[in-house]
Length: 220
Image (cartoon, rainbow, N blue to C red):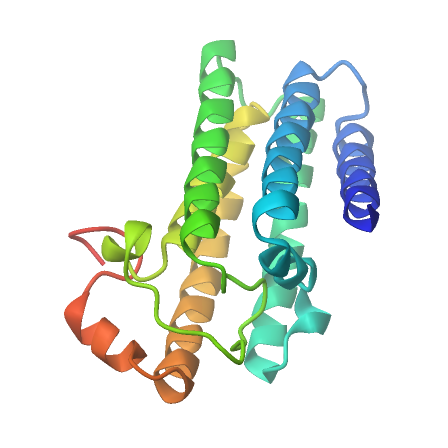
């Protein structure tokens, strides 16, 4: 049950950042976002506890300190800071009213956020090797079915959709600028991970040749 305790800590830290930056608890978008984050995280956690505890264990080891490659430590440090900004900027927007977003748009942001989580769930269901760090399991093999038949990195695609939904869900147009700043770090991680897999995972180079699209079908 330690994983549930960690999730609770994450939620409390996120709530503290949101409401401290907003300067108020009267921020319905933040309350709804925290509920959506908690519900989706719990749903995936309970699924993995029952169906794929090995993957859950791999997902627990994440963040800059868990990465083995120096480049990935740098990338994940940047991504972690950017994620904090993804919460702080919309909350400051709420506090100082930098932008006005209609309530239906904020609700649509929650739908986008949950769609991103759903895409990540389908990745987890298909790929038991979807570690939170760039590494290889002893028995790892190339996965080319399900969402991996569409793009080589469906988890990053789903993650990008999820991240895009956060500032909209929190009612902030300015928060979208943080997403723009995060995209180079995501692309850097993706390309560096592909180099690692092509060198170390048998069959991955062939998979790259077969499937051209990394992140967005028919585009890139």
